[in-house]
Length: 134
Image 1: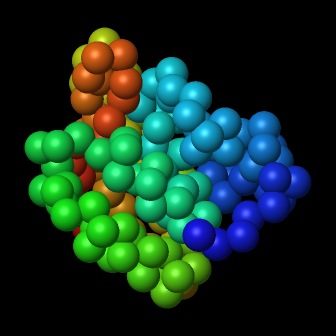
Image 2: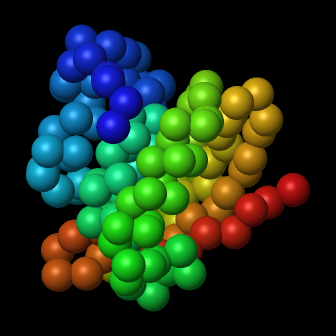
């Protein structure tokens, strides 16, 4: 895991210190909605917190890998080799059991836009799937 000081600005771009923003979710607090989960997952990638990414991924997700060791290695490699330079929320469509969040990220100087689907399972929001947009 990359070292991310609790007093650092949160990678999600909230303007709040990491310890008061996404860190509580990385330590076990449940995200109250899909938008919060999406931001905390971005921060987890930036921090190299593979455990959080895995725990907040729906089993139906195409990236889901039952081989936790291999999946952890892939996430950590991606996190180590990527600079997480910014997150911009473009749209959030809340729902009771399913939500959509569209966002744009700056990863190592290149931009990606994704529309992500989140599902609530037994009181927990999970990342289900996403599609990259032009």
